Image 1 (cartoon, rainbow, N blue to C red):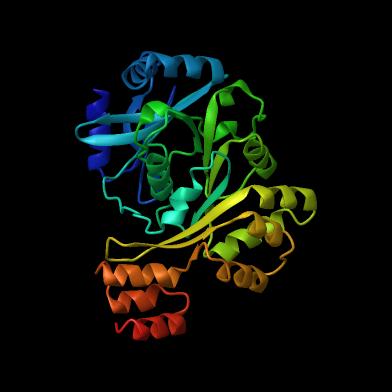
Image 2: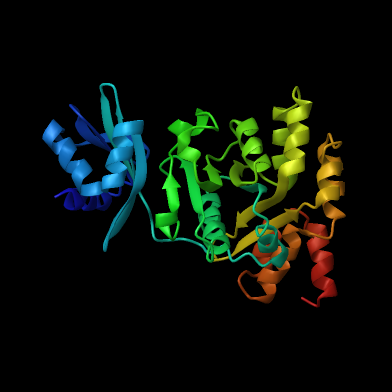
Length: 337
C-alpha cells in the first residue's frame, strides 16, 4: 500500500512528500506544496508507515533520539526518508532519488592518495545543481572499499546514493548542533557533512584533530572562493583559522558540462608547507598564487583538456566551462588540438 502510494506520487511528477499525524499528506510539484488526497493521517497509518520503512534498529533510534533518516527502495523507486517523533510532532519527509547520475570519475591520482591518511578535513565544492552529493558518495564509496570503518552522514533529505549502506550511519541535520562528545559519534571514523555550507566549524576541526576524517560540502564557484568563505567566517577567530589550516587536507571544485556526461575538477592537495602558508593569506589573489605554484594541484583547464582528449566534451563546451579561456587556448595549441 505504502509502496503504491509513493509510486503514485512519483508518477504525479513529485519528488517530495510529507506525512504528518493528524494532517493530510502533501506533495511538492513545481516547487508548490499541494494535497495528495483528502485523507487525514491516523495513528494506525503512522505506525503502518514506520513498520513498512524502518528496520528494528531504526525504530529504536527514532524512539530514543526522536529522529532517524534512511533509504526506502524497491525495484521501481528509491526514496530518502526522515522520520521525526518529538513531543506532539510526528512527521515523515520522503525525497525521491532519480537514477540519472553523472559519474565524477576523478582523474587525479594524488587525490585518492591523500584520503589514505585517516584524518584531516576534505572540502567538496561546486555551484548548486553540480553534483556535490553524488561526488561525495563516489568519494566515500571509493575510499572505503577495503575498510570496515563506519561513516556518519549529516545531511538533509538530499539525493545521495551511498553504496555499502550498512557502514553508513544517517544522522540527519537536526543533530548538527549536538556536542562532539555525544554518544552518537562513538565508533565513527569518518564524518560527512553534506549541507552545502559550513556550520559548527570548531566541531569538525576538533574531530580532525582527534584523528578522524571529515568531509564537508560547500556551495562555491572556485577553490579560492571556498577558502575566502571560511576565512571570512573566522575573521574574529584567528586561532580557529589556524587550527583549520593545520587540518585542511584537500579541496575539490566540480563543474558539470551541460549536455554531456563529463564532470570537471579543480583539485588541491595540501602538504604541511601549504597548510602553514595558507594561514597568512588574506585575499583571493594570494590564495590563487599559492595554489597555482604547488605540485599537487590540478587546474580546471587541465581537467578540461583530459576530457577533450577522452572525447567527453567538445571544444565549444570546453571554452564555455573554462575559467581561464586564454590559458586554455594556449594549452590546446601546444597540444595541437
